[in-house]
Length: 447
Image (cartoon, rainbow, N blue to C red; front, side, top):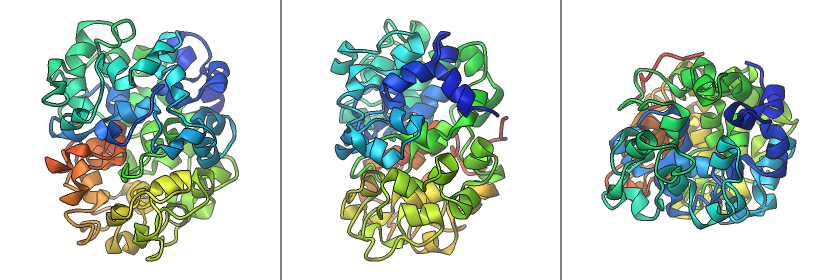
């Protein structure tokens, strides 16, 4: 898939909008572009992928939507520092990530606008993409439901209740109502699927209509050129955001199948993330840096224990002491959360079980052709990962009870990580968004 150029050159906006995203991208970050709002810690809610995919992440996905991911909000508050666009541009995500808040300024415009061809939204500011996406604030309760639901036509959250993205997506145009509709529909024009199962985002991302639908071309190609994470990611997930990066989602593959079949990076890049990750860092690959470095160049968290993302990214274990930081840190260079402990994003990103099993294998493998959990490890991320690992999350399990917020993976996966998971992390969201994991077996890769 080509892409970066394309990504950059036409990037979604162009595709999306018929204009080049890149230029605009340049001006803004994708997140901003994408989301234009801070994901927010609770942003946890939805993922872009769903949005991207146009499928429901999963009703249970509830926990989070990609949009948030999409949102490009600060993944973490620190995400704030910079936007992905830079990353998109050729910066490290972290710095990019870090460099400015994606969200705050992200706020300035959202992707939808980009998507739409408008500024998402200076006023966008006022809303999150989900809102934009959704037309409502993602909000903490956003937590309740996922974008998929939204995507689906469910309420994202019970409170999200007011409308679902999908309905919203469906009902009206995303942009204007954008607010009122979901991106996915807009994006996709269809519900992602309950589990996206039918297709993965990658497909969509890849050779589906996201682009065509989206724009008349596939996103994937465009998508392809770069990794989603960077594009997508460009932000810290959130300190809790714990879960994973958007990149994968951004990647445009399903995390799982694609993940499985290949890593997104591979697809994205043509190499696996792990290899990519490992062989070289994503950034290097992406940019020439590692994502972690790119991302943050730091470990996700000491408790990140298992490994750091960079390491993970790199193919190393984060480290028990890693503990200290969270992915956001990684992403951001700050600790995600001590509790982040359960898993790190990188791991998640990585495709390892975050926790010990995280250790056991890398995500890349998962990325490669395993499921994350199984892929990841074939086991839960870590028992301490507590309830599940991201892989599971990735897989479609709850990350941990405390994970409660829910990781994006689940979201990505299309499950709620747990009802409590609700908060959902972006990774879940991410994952879901990717359409990757809705379930482990999730989907054929599209491409």
